[in-house]
Length: 65
Ligand SMILES: [Zn+2]
Image (tube, rainbow, N blue to C red; front, side, top):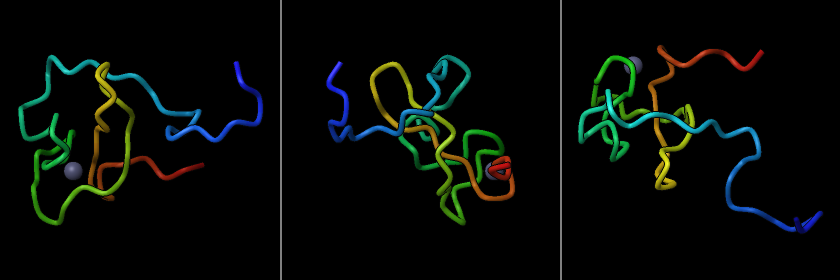
């Protein structure tokens, strides 16, 4: 590992299973929890195995305690 290198992904990103997600959810267009498309989901829950981010709306995301 390159210690100190800048990586594009946050180290805390969680790998998520894409199987239960719709195409819109996998593409980050819909909340991964409630499937709402508006307001757009902005909170990153984690990543899919292919590196795409999985997003949720602020109402569904856990507060960062
Ligand atoms: Zn939601």
